[in-house]
Image: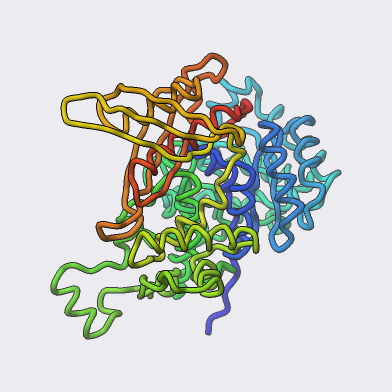
Amino acid sequence: MTSARTIRIFDTTLRDGEQSPGASMNLTEKLEIAQALVRLGVDVIEAGFPIASPGDFASVSDIAKTVSAATVCGLARCNDADIDRAWEALKPAAQPRIHVFLATSSIHREFKLRMNEDEVIARAVAGVRRARTYCGDVEFSPEDSARTEIDFLCRVVEAVIDAGATTVNIPDTVGYATPSQMHYVIKSLRERVPNIDRAVISVHCHDDLGLAVANSLAAVEAGAGQVECTINGIGERAGNCSLEEVVMALKTRRDHYHVDTRVVTQRLVPTSRLVANITGIQVPRNKAIVGRNAFAHEAGIHQDGMLKERRTYEIMRPEDVGLERTDLVLGKHSGRAALADRALALGYQLTPEQLQTVFERFKVLADRKKEIYDGDIAALCEQQFSALPEQFTFEGYTLTSASGSPPTVELRVLQNGEPRSVSVTAGDGPIDGIFLAIEKLTGIQTACRDFRVQAVTVGKDAQAEVTVELAATTPGDGGQVHRGRGVSTDSLEASAKAFLGAINRVALGSQPRIHPQ
């Protein structure tokens, strides 16, 4: 067998991925994703941008304290305050990395930085040197590398490696590169930078032209040793290189790339589902590797070929990415151990307290439904990892509605543990009436930006999953979008839970954030 080099997988779901509009996560959710990434086998977890907000600092610090099997990375601009703040968050990490960045392209130098080439190099070198006073693992990114003149890019890379950078990342910040261009850039760095052997070359590609995965693969082919990517390809604008796609491309076409990764590919689908449900950004059915249709065959000629030999139309086995051939497993008589085992197979490692809560809700659901599917179990588990401190908790509703007349809704909630209720006769229908009742009871006015309902599984008794995105119109919130999610066999109850979930985020408030490209 041909010997293969190992490509490091640098996951930035918790940093760049969180910059997807509406994808902000609370601390509990970030910790759960970080633990899932460790189980997935990624090499580096970029946990956040510590100076961006107190919340980012806390999440990087807590992940640094709890993760030991992967490098924990924090982002910083090339200035003392950012770097110092990053180190404060990363200090508890067993394997810390400070990731500093500075723009290098001519358009950024002229219009954003207002610096010449020598000034940019001096700032980059100073940033790397300061980071090295804190830890030995320092990554430098020349932002907008894809639009940086190759001669200047080589100068910058050589200077920061001399200053102590152990990884040099080449970001296609605006998704402008093509595969042949990316291959040329990486090849040029390897041939023209005399000290390049002292650092790992990384690549960070955005998907504005739909080329992020292709560009990343071209970089690997040219000699890059690290790929920066996100689960489901989420991220700023059109997103980032998709982790599951680049990993499976390298694995499936090992004959071409001659590289390996440490990723446990059987955990790709469970991790994808976890991130999708926490962020509210659902995976398209036709998404490569993890979409519902990725291993579905409808055409008769395909089905015939599959029955004769699966390799005729499948280049990967569904089991290799974590898809199960069977779905229906548990029923109302199933025990706690069976539930825990199934939850773990789906990617959820529950604490004893979480398992008890899920088991109690599972029994309630089993009384409502004849058949419990994997999706139902996943929905119950996910509620344990997306909980915020709740000022308002759904208790129940009574509703009277008829065509052509506004509904009458009596809503019952707990506010900080105390029962409250309200009754309204208003709205265009039952869901609108429930939303108006919640606004009246909480005193928080909102504008609904998105409302989605989908079935968690199949059948007329399937649970409904509702996701809403609200922009508060109350003074002081700044129009920030807040997300809520609710699951129930009663779609109106699911809608109320989702709306209250978003309202709780509004009530909790948020800190201003800095969003690097």
